[in-house]
Length: 268
Image (tube, rainbow, N blue to C red; front, top):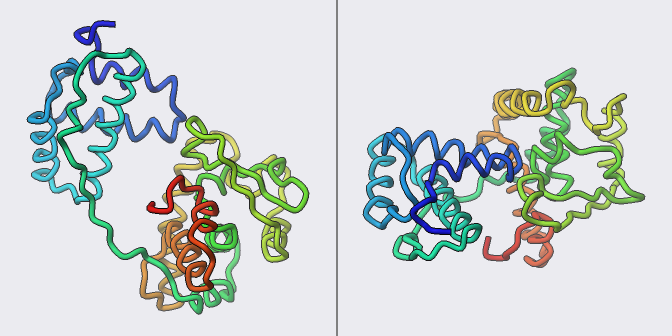
């Protein structure tokens, strides 16, 4: 395929039918921002290091934070890589001359005493569901919110929960395996419902239900944090970081922590 025929944003439209809906949102976001910057589509063969740096500068001037810029640039790079691979384009990859830099603030992890404080709160209804989803993530080795929301009862096999990290479902067959402790079983039993899902979150429109709950859960976690005077603003990612940090404190090997988080690299 001749490289002159392949356009950047047109290729992103093609990816909508290839990627999961959750993963495609990253590419759609990049497409929208790039259109603000360039105002039109561009041939992939015309993307060079100068345009890449100009796009980075555009994002900085728009007030984007370093990690937000990093996410945009990684998606930009991934789009170029996917197009080159699919069409076997005979072009030099412009990102070979560009280094993506992001800030890595200290992971927001809680002292274990705050986990106990969150657990001991007397909550009801949907606020209790938010708290229990947070705890479930911590108990299940930092399971992501998307996997919790879409966790099906069929994924409970014997004494284990077996799942593939949702954001990687189209790119990996690597499975997470979590032993069903008494604490995890108790949470599952408390939220038993008539649907195929473990938690009563996904009901009518899966994507809409998930997006609505994601917004709601992070809003309400902030309230829960205020109830216990938590020094860290609670989000679902805090449960994930707290599990990983607690595992390090207990001397669990990094290779085991990597497997629990379903990362491909210990460095990550």
